Image 1 (cartoon, chains in turn cyan, green):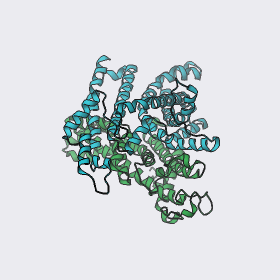
Image 2 (image 1 turned 90 degrees about the vertical axis):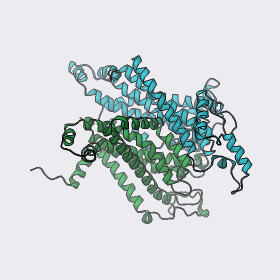
Image 3 (image 1 turned 120 degrees about the vertical axis):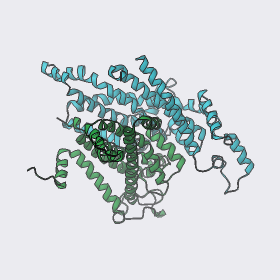
Image 4 (image 1 turned 30 degrees about the horizontal axis):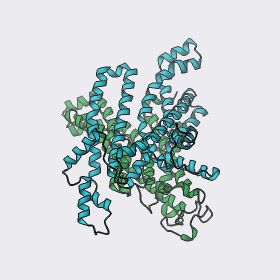
Length: 317
Length: 285
């Protein structure tokens, strides 16, 4: 097992390096001069000295490789540069917004797991009945209905029926748990709807496959009650793909965070990305995209390792 | 003699065996018809701003009401179908095809080529789909063709990965060895023997990505990174704060969202049933 872990850890290093390179290149391939864009340019009338100063400030006058090296070196020391929009270090801006996004992510995952797994089980056990169809349609709905539209509908409903106004500042749960919950409940449900839809479908299909296995058939033949079979035997074996799914759906969680935070005007990491892009705040965009990729790779790694831990066959390939 | 399987018979069989999939297909067809007949169906010019009827409620003159510029919402939604379908089909088709070709090449040529391509795909896969599309779209600027490019690029490694694994197992088949022993050129082996046998995963991931591409376009346009005003993209119609329209004109955020949901719903239903039909392990009892 340790060898497997070591191997996988080694493998992600070139991947992360490649991802960093990709992010860096994407940001530099911009058609047009970044410095020019930022200064604004007064209908073609730009002070060349201002331009040169801006380029120097951005470090654009250095050769590409040097720029990359400087950035990478900074990344390794957790220094992502300074935001062009706020003038604060990127790391600081990030740390302010991280708790909200984390809480949103964790709560959404929790909600979806609590709802989705029982629903998926129900649909599998009653396959091809009305229960199954309803659950399937609702969960396909969760995949089809744009997440941000669910959020928009929530806001519509809240404003029209309850005269609700969006909260202005984020209250951490340890300061005032009730306020925190009331702020986050709707975004959590919005993000959680899609998340639980996917988990429901996966639980259902995995449980269906497991129920066809021979050891289940033996249990039926022995005369065990349906409940015992499903819960004690089938469920445990079908949890593995579901766990990996929870890991891989993390990607959609991040994407969901981006749009949902924008819809609900929450001051989280997701909206930070969108705002930074709108402001052409390249150091921030670069840092955030890289960090998102980084966490995505780590989560996938953890998922793979969990899978290998549960299923010894994987380790010895 | 077995009865001949005509197109009509296959369709009827599909409808009977997979009603959900048939419903999905019907929705897709309806969307395509709407997109094709915009001139006939749309009562107004979707770009025409009539400041006399801003925020008009749905009525006989404007079935879906009007938006903040007085543009007829129904016409904009009808034209929006074109954009959704265009982006959806083009982006997923391009992404999946390029990905599939890369996957087959990688699997067939093996060795250094395979290693290099796999590393490249791994790097691309390090980014969540929407995030990568967002980054690319932000560079290219808000325009329809840029959205297509931005959405298709994350699809490439995902399609490549799926097709590559199938191609690897196809490659091991005896008939491939036989045809190679008979002197078939590499091109012939790939085109005539390997490609046809990876069609199943290719179609599966294609249909899976169609709905995702439409959603991605909606999300990107909503964030201001996709279609630009005044293009009638459904996602774009949803942008601007729902808060500001909530009391004045709630129909503005509702109808485009319904359209998007319906479209993706249709694609997902159809894709699901297609996958069930193509994957022998998943057929119901």
